[in-house]
Length: 408
Ligand SMILES: C[S@@+](CC[C@H](N)C(=O)[O-])C[C@H]1O[C@@H](n2cnc3c(N)ncnc32)[C@H](O)[C@@H]1O
Image (cartoon, rainbow, N blue to C red; front, side):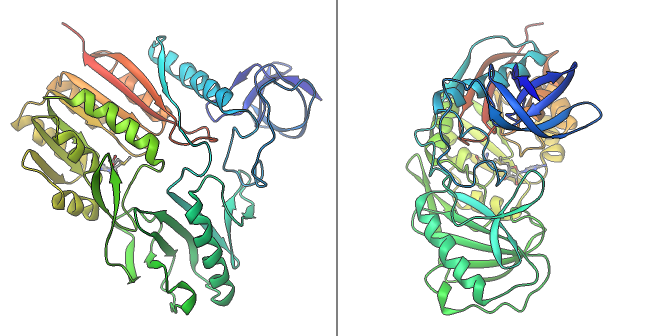
């Protein structure tokens, strides 16, 4: 069966129609006519694979990764980088129509399309490390070309190690590159009788028990060889730990932070969802005052270590702490940088009732961003939208939106 790809979905798949019903075909470009196979019928839409591209887009290229299209990770390796950016812009434009934004979007590309990730998480399955595909099939990988090159070597070492130590309850291994070293975290679902061999002696390893690494509920079990390490962002050394949050693409993160700094000059600011305080620290140099709010205790403690005189850190949930803070003090700007879930409605309502003049919203999930922008729409207008290509080859993007209070 043949179809013509007419649009792009928010998850990066080509979109066509058969007898009026929408069908999503990953790894196809707008304008291409493709032969499809393995059609999976759904109640509202179907999904299929491209068996043969009959009229290839002029921007098609040969994916350089052997796992492309099977590991479930990348969406755009089949086109050149220019086209990838164009497709991302289109995806974002389609989403922003929902909040009546039709203006130009500023694009900040990534200098590196490959080898940019300072952190990757590989799942563990029957002695192997890899990723789960969209169909939940385990795909073993020897390396990942999105990861910074030093991480490849650490993967090799851990794979050798796992041949000797066959864990029952290991869920995943996370590799994180800091200024000096690679931090390796083993995440277990239950207590294991952990034994470390000589193989990992030269690495910094910690073991955790829980569901996700970056959570206070996940308990540190043991740490080896860790004497402290840093990540440098715009010349500031930020202490890093196994479970701290850092943007995954250092170069793009610096561009994003520069953009935010420019916006913050001389203002009194709330930095909600502030992590270990990297952004607060940078903002504090240019602004009158910054108050960070962060739920994760370990991140809050790092923020306390690096704080300057015009910084304050609150450890708690934004939905609880923000209304209290806004009752006591006035602020010029709130910077929101939530996790993928976006902001709770109570957070949006607190901002609206305090009528904070300006909002700068950083989002790694444009679906929840658009949901929150809809709730702000009656009181705020969008001044500018910028797309920071933090995650090349994937349909994820970091979006920064600035908003101002409408005049009454
Ligand atoms: C995307 S990270 C942003 C970190 C920081 N802005 C930076 O650039 O380093 C989101 C942060 O929000 C925190 N977080 C998640 N839910 C929260 C909540 N309800 N209240 C406060 N912080 C929360 C997470 O622990 C995480 O550190």
